[in-house]
Image 1 (cartoon, one colour):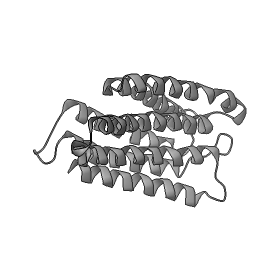
Image 2 (cartoon, one colour):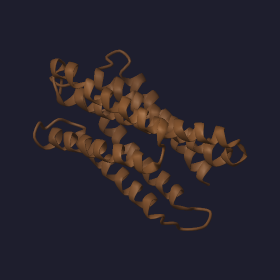
Image 3 (cartoon, helix red, strand yellow):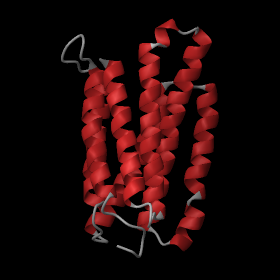
Length: 207
């Protein structure tokens, strides 16, 4: 079931990425470009998760480690695109040009750490503050700047936090529907709301 829900999550993320790119291909703004890659990286992480859960037990130990490292690296890269997509929406392009180096430096540090220590606690220490910051930017966009779409993205992120909480708590409904499966289902709902918001937001100055 975990493999199945991972694959479904990959398909959802891939569909959202392609829809964003297709709908805005003639007027692809920086924020939409970054959101497209955000969804692709979420999808790649899910696909790697499916490989890890489904075929991982049959892999040599070294291959298992490589697949796991690629999985957690994809999470870090998706965080990078979450930040850059939000920057392009919240700040003027002149500000984004120097702000964009911050997530890049953070990503390089994250990758360097993960190569040596790929514990999931390291992932959380990077993922959680990043997503809280993105949530803060989206709420600022919604309530202060009054930009469309950011409210839906905020809801999607909050749903993702609930999904992560369920996973960390280890809550299961059935031995064949465990905490990972529940996490994936809730995460699908979170991704839908983020996607719904992305369709409405624009680069700074165009809202």
